Image 1: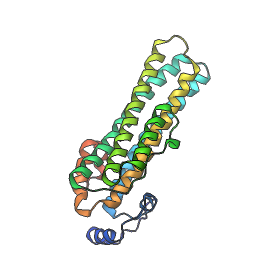
Image 2: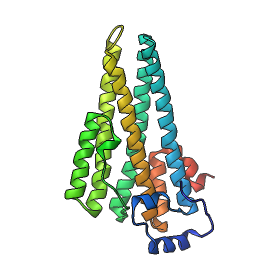
Image 3: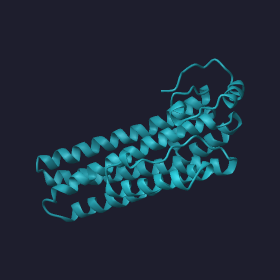
Length: 238
């Protein structure tokens, strides 16, 4: 959790941070952020985590009905789950898109670590993360590695959406029951999307650690325009 010390002005902190840039993603995660950056990071993180909690509740309800063999209720809950899954997936991709576009335009590059397949449970996510991690270690470096990781997370999210929607559509077409493994597959997809939330949050924190103070406002404007629920993080609306 970022240190909450608010004592320095943004400009002075930017100068200080430029001299004391974190050397690793782990150091970034525990690094202090200036007030305005910290507020935007917390707002974005909170929005993603809230959506993730709601998704988890819907998944728990779906699994609970399935375990009780209440298949019609389970089907109804699974449809809600799929809608919430898409909602969170889209928000994640919008945050990633904002980071990519800003990094590409301004050349702002944070520390980054390769994706690890151990953070995922599904075959598709593991396959993509394994290939991404190998390329990051053996081929890519610096700028290319950063954008490659963002693209890989987006690819995983897209595949997870496709798989979730296919399972729920199949469930809705079956009467009355559906193979037990299908319900467990939804659980795996939820787990892997949660991993994407974690990966994106860590990247965002490192991104803020690398972001010069003068770039904060254009980044904020772009992010808020794509994710309207973050308007509370816009100082002009206070």
